[in-house]
Image (cartoon, rainbow, N blue to C red; front, side, top):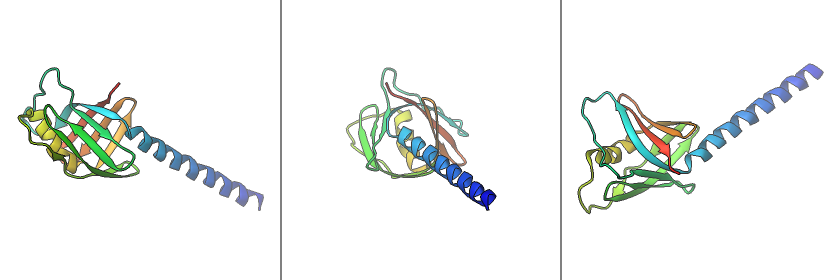
Amino acid sequence: MKTKILIILILFVVLIACNKDDEANVDNLYHSWEAKSFMSVESAAYPKTEGRKIGLVFFKDGTYGLNLDVNGCGGTFKVSDNSIEISSAMCTLICCDSKFSEKLAIMLPKVTTYKIDGKTLKLNVPQWGYIELELSE
């Protein structure tokens, strides 16, 4: 009997610990991130405009903001464990963003999972690659 209670207690502690890790990982997502690079199977280059920060912010209310070279965008997202579903970005159409910014806005809705490693966020796009972002200070 004592062994069964001990096993149940250990399982309970393990389940709680795993759940807290998932919550902490989601909480780490709710920050400002600067887009740094793409790693993809494409051979095309997407140059960034020098001196411009391309920023992505995830808010706890399930919305996000995206600052491109010139235009601003926004949308919604849903998170479950390390899975993420990001809606298409609704953007202003002021002028000419870089190819990098345009590609970022196009790829966000194709992201399916994310991983945070220290100050680096990787948004994974199946069959394409990933978008690498760095925590903004």
